Image (cartoon, rainbow, N blue to C red; front, side, top):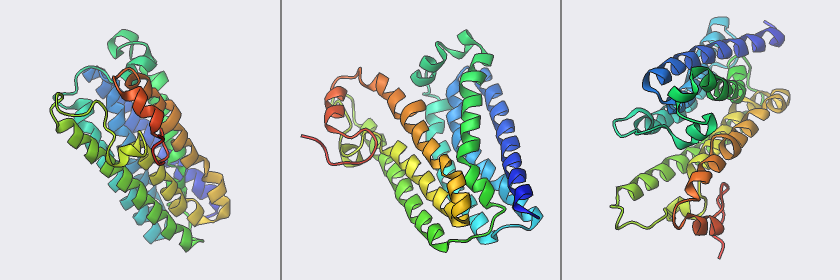
Length: 273
C-alpha cells in the first residue's frame, strides 16, 4: 500500500483513539470535579496511540515490525511511569483541591466554569497536542527504517530523558518526606541544582529521542515532516501547562525567587553565582 494512504490511515487511527480517551477523561473529570485527571491521560494517551497504530501496522503488514514494537515499549515505559507518578497527586486520597495551574487557566473550579469551558480550554487543547506530538510514533508504525543510526541514537537520548525525569521525581519525593520544619525552603540539591524543572526537561528529552527513533529513523523526509512534534512538546512543557505556568505559583514561595535567580529554568546548567 502506498505511503499517501498508509500515513493518513495511521494518523486517523491515532486521532480516533485520542478522541475516545479525552471524552472518557472529561466524564471522569466532571464526576470528580477535577480537571487535573487529564494529566494521567496525558501519559496513557501516548501509550494508547502507540498500541493502536502498532496494531494498524500489524494488520496491514506494513512497516518495520521490530521498530514498531520497540516504540510501543519505549512509550509504554515513559507514559506508564508518568501516569503512575501523577495518579496520587491527581486522584489520590490526598489530592485536595484543583491543581492551581488548571484553576488559573479555567478562571475557576470545574463546577464553577462548566464542563464545556474545560473541554474547550483543556481537553481539546491537550488532545490536539497529544495528536501532533505522537505523530512520529503513528507514522513509524507503517513505515520502514531508513536510518538505523537514528534509531540507536534515539534510544540513548530517550534513556537520558527518562533518567532525568525519574531521578528528579525521586529526589523531590525524598525532599517532601522531610518534616517541613527541618527541610530547606526550596529543593535545590541533586538535579534540581542545575535545572528548576528536571522532570519537564526529561519529558522533552524523551520525545526528542522518540522523534529520532520514529521520525528521523524513517528517513529525512518523514523526519523533517514530524520535527514539529518534539518541538511542540518542548514548547508545551516550557510555556503552556508546564514550567512557566507552575512558576507563577512557585515565585510566591519564600526562597524561590532567589533559587530561580541562580538556577536555569529548563536546560541543566551550572548554577549562577
